[in-house]
Amino acid sequence: MFATILHANDGSEQAFKALRLAVQIAEQNKSNLHMVLVEEVPSMPDYIEEIRETTATAGRRYHQVIQRARAVAEQHQLTIQPHVLAGHPVRMIIEVSHQLSADLLVIGATGHSAFYERMIGSRADRIVQMARCPVLVVK
Image 1 (cartoon, rainbow, N blue to C red):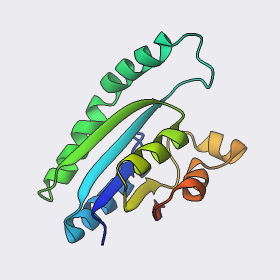
Image 2: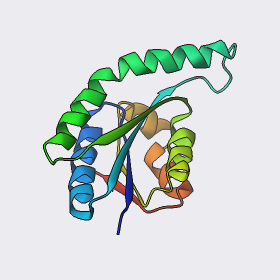
Image 3: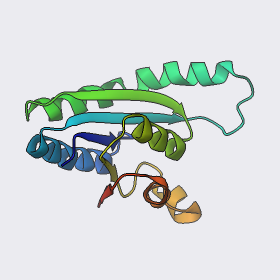
């Protein structure tokens, strides 16, 4: 039913809770499992090199998150394909889900920025509204 599953991870415990569920679903469906990690950059960076620098920094910052996610997947004899990007998290997650033709997107209800989400609105809500595929929001 779900050939390709995409999981969005910001390194939070809520994201890893969502990952564990994504892994279980992938195992049951023999799905390809992908994970997107997005380093947020300002909507108007001062210069284009800032995006490249942020992407390189994100790769280093998310190294431990990727290793931990791989360990979770390997416990179920699965591999996980990470995609580390820089940009606006909602936009990048939606773009990757479209590029992969994801059949399911699995995200945490909240991430590192719970205060931001209470003040401005939930990224999870925006992802649910914009995604073309079903979105599983894990609480």
